[in-house]
Length: 340
Image 1 (cartoon, helix red, strand yellow):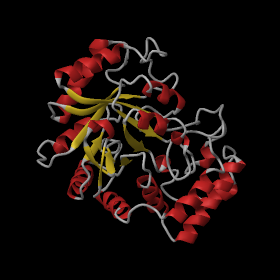
Image 2 (cartoon, one colour; image 1 turned 135 degrees about the vertical axis):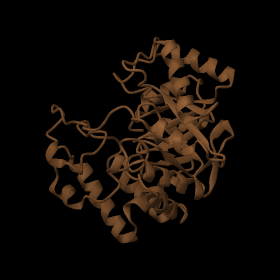
Image 3 (cartoon, one colour; image 1 turned 180 degrees about the vertical axis):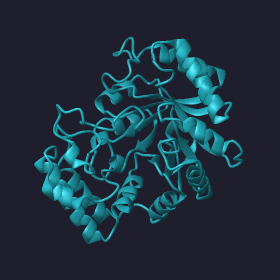
Image 4 (tube, one colour; image 1 turned 45 degrees about the vertical axis):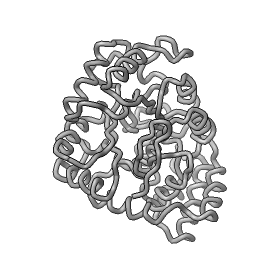
């Protein structure tokens, strides 16, 4: 497994990172999760990401790695605990970190992210949004000074709001989810330039668009469900044709595209099984995509440079009959805190 330096942290991270959303009650069970984590470590993945908002992921991951002797990087987040969660409550924030340390069987957290610091109406982190200040800043400063955390990060799903938080120069790493993949490139406009200007580490999340690029949906795309814009439909059809021309699976192409990004340092996968870990590692071991393929992907991505207004963040390609438009309660079904 090739490695990269995570920006100004100086940490050497594997090209693939392990996102632990499904290493939890949301996944296939403890034994499968343990096999997946151990397979990842065996194959050279050294970056593991979790969060209090990922069901009981911290607890399950902590049990799995409690006796692991192989060095690895472990990151978690602030947000969503306890319930009801008050992001302006300093005592709650400190207690959440204490609980993370207990569940993960760690004395130090390598990177502590502020979870969803950007999406409107998600968490009210900032008493002064323009200055990017709230109690969480004091908590992070205190924990870093005490050596409880090594580095700080932002983990979110927007680009303009996230870039504003990055310009505060208060954070070491950014985890950008849903905004950089074979077809979605919004992160290139502000996230990547801001990260480069500040030497921030960049973690790429949801490069398979939470399943939208995890497999092909040729029949659904051709049928054009109501939420699917004409431009996005034509883009997907062109993308599927490229896959046929290149003779590549959608997952292999998308993962190899992500590791081709010079601005990213590690790419999160969210495996449920050891087999999925192996398949992902096998794909990226083939290396970055060729220049010709990257050029064709750039042309296809440019067909829809920004998301259409009605498009949900997680594309409901696997449930087109359940989606009836932006006024319906099903909009973004499954989209919630903890999908990074």
